[in-house]
Image 1 (cartoon, rainbow, N blue to C red):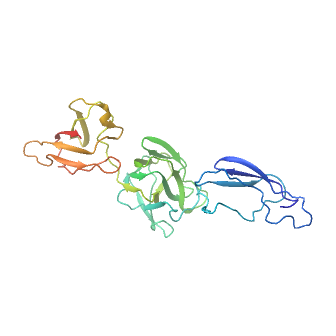
Image 2: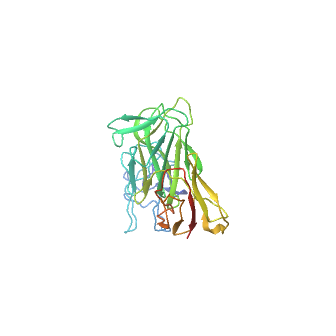
Length: 303
């Protein structure tokens, strides 16, 4: 604290306060280790703090004091910063992971600066990246560069946003998109290039450390007033045919409320499924291998 110090603003979790570092203490040294701000009403959780100079010639910090059980964490990453490794609480999947589906013409580019030494990129409008993941948060890592699009479309569970990978100079492993606060369940993600003469790339995907990356899946069961369908494949597409009526409560968007699916019966000479119970995993999805011929299952019931 000294006469050349002034006011400073301190923002905690978006709430602003002001404190003063000014002091009339005699002598040129001022007051050493002076307490200039205190807040004892915070909850026991993680907080984000920003301090800025408002007046005076100097703003300086000597030390921070916290409750004994607290710890000082690194500031949260900002979009556009380089992120060469997943932070604590995150884990990384590289672009070569088999669960990531690339639609259209894509190229691979080698560079020791990329997350796994390789990046997947394309410059064709309509090209897509698709995958599913379980977790509450996601980050997209790409090379920031002048050839990148500034309006890349990303759709999570049907909600579309855009992000920019443009940068005035090249920077490997750039954090170009982040989404937090999602429900802890499986989410479907589609990334698409919309801007002509520009590029889109994927170096890596970061999600919750306890999460899981999966290939994109078709949502056979949707919100409906019925709980029993026949499942068929027609012209290369999966089709649900309503065969009876039932309570709407048996279904929710993108899935259903149940613990298993019972496949009942089969067509003559086709025994690919018969009275088979499939346990539903996390995210209320399931996988059942069946004959790839376009012959439908007779029917199925929800239990």
